[in-house]
Length: 360
Image (cartoon, rainbow, N blue to C red; front, side, top):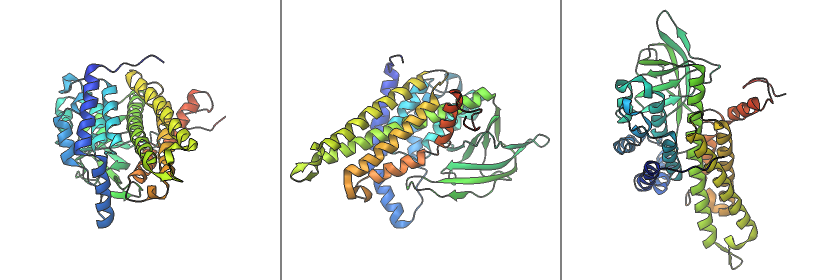
């Protein structure tokens, strides 16, 4: 694997994102939001103001080409923003917004501009390619069910990555059903499903099979970057805790078993981060499935270890460790279930007949 060098523009964007999230959407604020929502039974917010501020700092336009009114930075730059957001467990609609910009980049300035400025907030539906949105070619309408729409009851547009097209749908258009909240364990997020019945899309961009695979790979890689940023912060919190917590007259962190657990976590993060950044720097996004699987394993393993390193207090609202564990579980299903990435790897290794077929 080649040595990856982050250029000056990418490094500046990462520093800006880290400082911004730490100030405007810090982990402490996420923790407080969870307390309020738990106490008052409130649904988490789409964080529209935060997205507007991010747009003002070019966090979305950096992903778009100059011809579409963007800055035209690399995909790696988007991954670095995602890493910084993961460190503070920033949810809201921002990641869907970023991916909507990337998917609509070649659709023209009129289509992309409202998403660049966060005038319109998007939720992206990554529907299973084998369960395509059904077209009525005579009427030019679509029908089907959109699942996993993050903050879908509050956004301005649904952006659908179907098998053969990217669709922009107004949630208030004729034929769009009422959003139904899907069960979830992450208190910082929620998702809805929506039924479409002969809905006229606001915009359609048809895709080749290769383009669909590329957008799925890009989405998986950015999700992986978010996960590794969160895993790194989770491990930092756990290490800081065991340095101070004493047992039997010694800091817990001085015990060999704890040292090994922390060291293994640090190595896993280094490996995952290196692979994810290399994938995002590759125009073909090869090994995106491997990056997704590695990030998933790294995030869950570290979140579970951090919980054990904290002992019983890790389950309480006094520390944010439980939020990382719940976030890791949620990220297993976004943008698509991580099992699909396993299947893709098996297929490319010749271990099964098709990407969703039977193992040999």
